[in-house]
Amino acid sequence: MIAVVNYGVGNLKSISKALETVGATVEVTQNPDKIKSASGVVFPGVGAFRSAIEKLNAMKDVIDSLEVPVLGICLGMQLFATESTEGGLHRGLNYIPGKVLRFPPSVGKVPHMGWNTLEIVKETEILDGVESGEFVYFVHSYYMQTDDEFVISRTDYGINFPSGIEKENYIGLQFHPEKSG
Image (cartoon, rainbow, N blue to C red; front, side, top):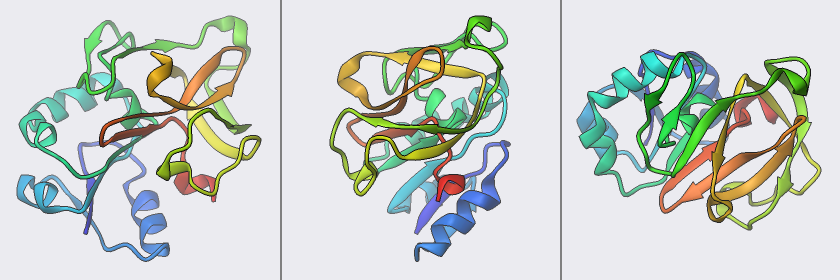
């Protein structure tokens, strides 16, 4: 069973439906026992960093104990960072060292919304079958800065930013795979 963690953000249904379409058994849950017993955990993300991290801090010990793959999508990825500047300075879960920053006005329209390409920089299971230059769907105003050793894909939007990251069992995708096909 894949646990899609309900921590008060949007896109729970679209993530669940996409996983079910590829044959996964999915449960949307906040239950610590169900999260601990899952074969994989997904932190979806359409929402604000501050309110999301406040809810996740209440279950941080559960998240810390996970040894299965943990996927953060969009905001879910950003929550893995050390800190975020969204709505003030807030501490993240600190699973992947990095800082979440707002796109500067110089990039053009913010949020970065629509289709953009990936540059695959590291072979990894989550991107198996995806090639550099493929289009994926983004909706975000903030991006994560992190060390290159954790970056699995990059995307250019006036700034070349990490669109995929991975460290141990924590995997983050800034784009929405459930909308990307």
